[in-house]
Length: 325
Ligand SMILES: C[C@H](Cc1ccc(C(C)(C)C)cc1)[C@H](NN)c1nnnn1Cc1ccc2c(c1)OCO2
Image (cartoon, rainbow, N blue to C red; front, side):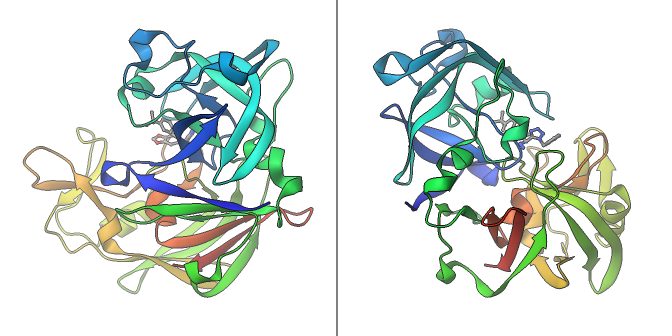
């Protein structure tokens, strides 16, 4: 089988939500290549924590996996936990007849507050799934064997709907050729080595080991690369108040170029002029921030929305394919 689902951006492209049928109920989920749990707001989530969210009702067709629990905490200190059901999950027509659906019985305030978000659908490697006593497979791993090709592609866009395609590569969605690089799976992420970064024809240094993470909004780069980039924007500062680098909204924000597999890819400066940093709208928050304290270099949505990316498990060695949109 194969299929395609829309990826709808929230305001400022903070995250992208995709309609998914879970036990026959449609929920808008944040597809996350940087985590491996499919969890949803549910009728088991206290009303005080779930107003405004679509909820999964396991009573309709879910089969309880008794004694199974899950508990996830994300790098931004948000998190959720709950119990586990097996149910039918359909994404863009691709059907998992019995997928582990992790029903939330508790969610952190960040999730309560984002009422567009009805849960996450993890697309990292199942080795980092949090279900106990027995780890469960991601949606992709559950359906992989039934897909025309064991891959999915990600085509996020700036300020408009993109797509996640499962089982095929749509050649109309990218320009030029796809450049493939090997993936290191030991940490459970789609982790690869990126190369030299430049802006205004000046070297910013090497980006190095990085993860392709659709669930992260921004790019979190090595501090040396980040400071070298902002040295090119007059008036930019790393503001503890704002929580990162900001600059005058009318600044000339240079394009960011990154070498992957020997090819150069461009993130337009306008994607890096990310959002107003304050109500005055005078200062703007950068789409590139330092990876301090995160432990990984993360190429999130600001990077991904300039690219067409193939998450490929067609061979025993997973790989990532990159092309310009
Ligand atoms: C943060 C997301 C996971 C998430 C998504 C959405 C949300 C809200 C809907 C409530 C807005 C919270 C959480 C990411 N996914 N791979 C993730 N999950 N675990 N680590 N990361 C990457 C990281 C780690 C640390 C960081 C960060 C990023 O941004 C700022 O500091």
